[in-house]
Length: 209
Image (cartoon, rainbow, N blue to C red):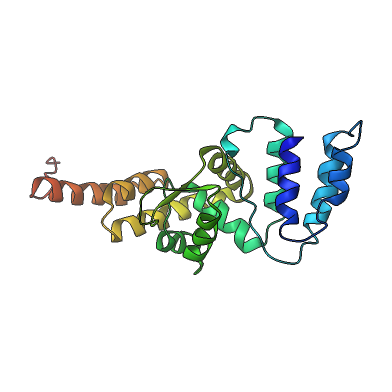
């Protein structure tokens, strides 16, 4: 219940009055079951006029099933372009603006990452320059699970896009990883040959047929 209070207070910083009824229910001497509270809160969220991304510090410490359900519901309430950004980039072990643009086919990846980074929540910087980030692991797991459920047919293409970007930017090991997940084995072999040439200074030696 303390977690829900924290979420509602965050939403009220965006638009006054959001979740007021849900907060009243939470603070009642005998709070109702979690489901009507969530439904009431989600109805309020759907009426928030501005686009927003809900970011939660220490989400990886949250184990209660209703809280995970609430995060799933709130993800569905996001604008489609933001929801797709989060889902499509969940396949990435690390993120930067240009990579996100390549994978999502959007042009605002850096802006979204900047917004999340400024909140110092949800997204973890991997370098001092704030070029590379990763999602909290459990949040990434939730996103990827929903991606598999809702848009599973896109997974090979998303991994191919990621592989292409990594290869073009000389991150060949990660390019191989994504090519293999995409089951693009021919491309993976080509990339492994490139790695061999870089590491050993000579073409890959192929076995005679």
